[in-house]
Length: 429
Image 1: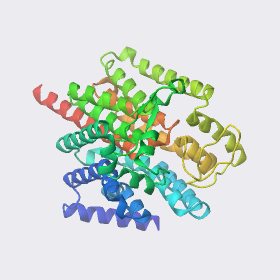
Image 2: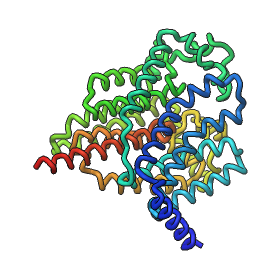
Image 3: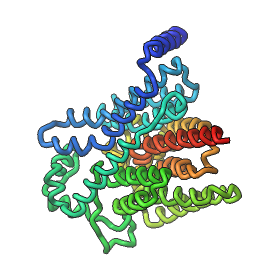
């Protein structure tokens, strides 16, 4: 049966290639559609939210993963159906625990987090086959960046009008957020500076952004920052650094600043290890300080390991929730304060740890083949990707498409640009 499947996929890929239906431009177009859907779908859903129900909301929210899965399927067909053992193992583990969660916890919760855990795999598949297609979306990215800034400006200057024009209250209701009035939403939107407990008395407005989610919008701002940085448009890049700061999200901001700092060191390979030590120091500090102040991300992460001893095999994908110091049971109400690692531990037990380990090994194997990027001006992309993966220890958003998939996009751009520079250099010599 596996041999028949492989032969069928190989034949189909060859047929499609012969008819020129699968070419680099087609994939490039697909990426464009995906980017538009990814960055603008939430604001579109918010506009029409008063007239749609939960089912339509879930369907529209899943469009980005459907488009990206289709792109990944085409790439898989171009490979003749060949996938690595690690990839197959990761997928089988994820789908097995998805089925457990589907019947034990519920279809909506388990499906939401299936999407969540599939993105890193799909991104890896795209990266491994970067030579199959071109990725040049400068015009589209400029257009999306302009929309991002325009909406952010409108929200910051005319906040209440922003909530009304985009029907944000109805959108929050669809997401299950308990907000009755715009005034109440305004109050909830004022947060401590970077959510640090020491700034309890200082609360300022935290924008929602084009994604209508501050952390996700911060990752998008970080994406634009690095994109314009590697395009040598430094003024625009600095502008997006300030946009990232506005969202007061620690994970995206730390990843962005350290990666930009590491890029300044690329000319001297002797200080290559400095970003490594800096990353380790930051991670250690975050865990230590977070535990002392009882930050929910850190508490849930640490206590998920104690939960592992109670259930080695996990409860199924979709089983999550804040693990408290009092040892309250984990609920399936959502990832409130959870991390990717905590999610995998509580949902999949030791198997979840294995799945994450296998995925990371595959990513390391890929980046070891393009390690030359570290010692070029594109090193900022390499370190940003590393830091996004590191953020997954503390926050679930690091595995969202706004974080890891946009980091994949940056990697594709960096690899292609570096190859073009190398080719031009050879032509000139």
